[in-house]
Length: 422
Image (tube, rainbow, N blue to C red; front, side, top):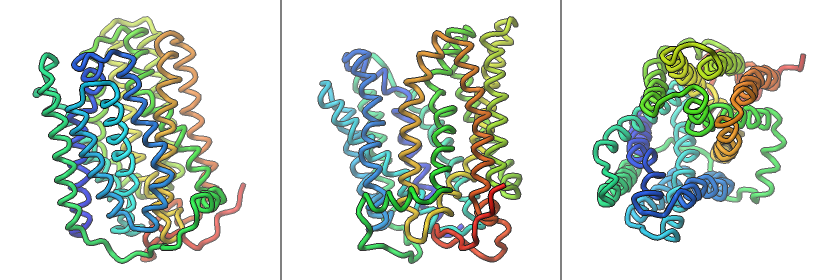
């Protein structure tokens, strides 16, 4: 791992550590500590998604024209200002404005950092690089949330101000770290096509369009349910306590931390499309186990154990996806356009994270059997979509290990023709 990649991974860990301080407590902070009510708190959470949807279509073009590093630095400064102002805000208008700035900065960080990883890796090292990124993100979020939980006091607004100040400090520290990064030379497209033209070019890439559809289903059926539909289902149908719900979330993070590098060697030797299909099967089992937790007739202890196992199984699937999906996005991108493709995929992710809770929350709370059945079918649909995607990929895109000494430089797509359908 080169010096640039080490700094990028340090940056990922710092940003996740900062976010871990505030993300779990944002709703409580707005609704109770600032006394703005549940409705305003819900709107604040929605603002994060809306801000991401607004800025991401432009972020990709900016990365293509200027490079990922300047865009990342601008996003970090915006996020730092948003975090600090959110910790000081007391009225609804100032809270919403601060949240939009923080949300926009956070959203742009993702494709910028992903593009930097692409530019500092080759096809042979990219899967490991993205696996390391995912590992550090989850570790940072977990540690940040744990420390933040000991610092926060709902009776003192100043304790939350401290949390947001620490988050802002992490972003500014990351600015300092990132200014020392020297990226390998990669092409910049000064006269990048218009936003309309660049999106048209991307939409003509059938493999990328199919990957975006698959990505939407992945995030909708998993990440979009963690803190909404699945938790509501656990409480209402399975009688899960809040402490058990916390244990389930911890089991998810622990599985990722423990399994990430154990599954990496397995994943690197297999076709990406089949790895994603296997994740669909694992998640189908997870939903079936969740169905037993809430709809079965076992003891409360068995229901709790099953529910915790559901989150652990989701974590196993996530550990398999991290070295698979993000590198594939990069390998599908034409030379110099990795930033555009990373931003497009991040946009799809944000759409899924916005729609997932809105659909899953009410279903999980009231229509228990239909909720489990629907997401069990979504998981099986992941298998079908992944295998269909495999037909659109070249042999090297689907299994980079076949390239031998050849590399897919800087996110450039291989020139091998795609395999025929059938």
